[in-house]
Image 1 (cartoon, helix red, strand yellow):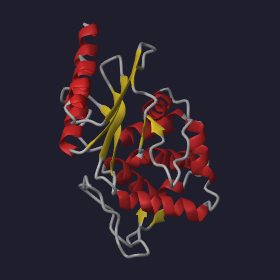
Image 2: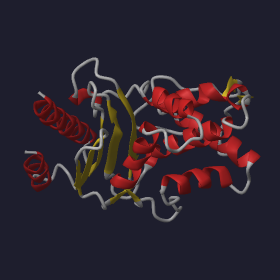
Image 3: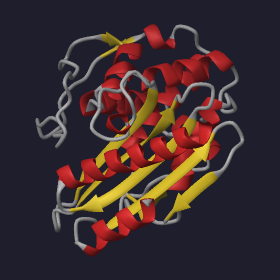
Image 4: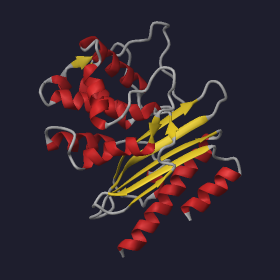
Length: 264
């Protein structure tokens, strides 16, 4: 059913690229479709940034309470987003780092992301903490010349490591990361495909090519099906944002219904 749906959407020209990765987190089966196809990570990179700060906080207990500020870029413009965040940090206003992390993950706020990256660059000019996170997660650092270098399986491994508390030194740090991801307010993709009230810890990413206006929309996270959570990642490429959102929703719905039918 899933493959038929995706083939139909692709043949109709509504999708120019799609990948799906499913994994039963109770050591059950996995499913991968186009799992080695590369996509632009876009806002999905906000999760490794969050994890870098949480990792640093394990040895610096006061880090997340430290106030920092967001300021405009050199050209005076703020970072523009196609999916506009419901909340964004104010310019030149001090917030604790934890508030920047929450705004970056819950609302996918680019201004919070920019402030956190800039602070990391100031404190660690060699970029080692972030690069250490990327290496630890098994993800190649995206280059400036080729943004299409993230596969769905490699990104999905982040959530597997968080679920099994295998990345951080402390289990509670993984729990903190998943709690932040469960606050994400993007409800049009994976969340829309599961019943109301089912907890989902996830992150979406979007990107629009300035050359040909091709869009990419991704959503990846853990669906807390009772007693048997599972991972679902969907990455899409096409020209219509609404179609991409609907595609992710429909994939999520089909996966949930199939998973639910096998649990009865």
